[in-house]
Length: 168
Image 1 (cartoon, helix red, strand yellow):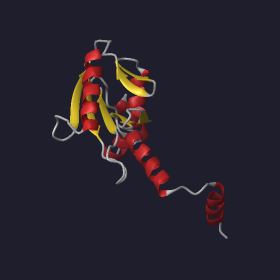
Image 2 (cartoon, rainbow, N blue to C red; image 1 turned 180 degrees about the vertical axis):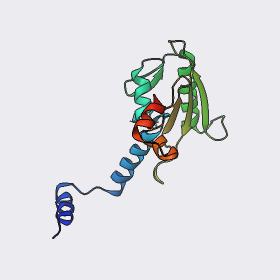
Image 3 (cartoon, rainbow, N blue to C red; image 1 turned 45 degrees about the vertical axis):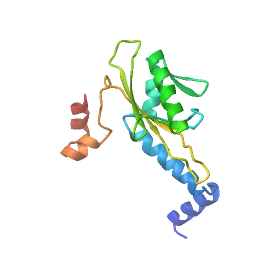
Image 4 (spheres, rainbow, N blue to C red; image 1 turned 90 degrees about the vertical axis):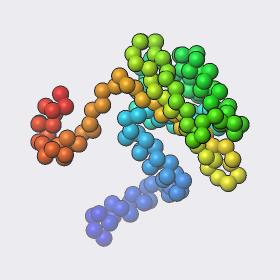
């Protein structure tokens, strides 16, 4: 048995078997972490199910967004009222938005440009579940987008040093 074959066999023995649902969940979470946009997934009861890396960063800034009892809340009372109304409409099937998406501008205590928040109703996960949860997409217009490591180097055939200099 070659070295790579024995390492692979040892890995199979040490790692518990993952179900297809576990694999899909891990891949989905990893994919969401790559996004520069904040993404928070909520259950039908509005409990936070998943927070991607960008959303976690926004929450840590304590500038208009917070988690309260495992629920997403805004420091802007008007945004909370609209958010709650949208969620109730979606759960009752009376949404006024034809696509099931709602847009909020969420004021920030710092005075920075408001967050741009899109709330999307998600379908149920199984045929028995008629109501799904919600995906909340948060854009911070004040954020500076920086390309990921290696992107400029690959796109423009730069050396590592040139890429670091370009990014600053």
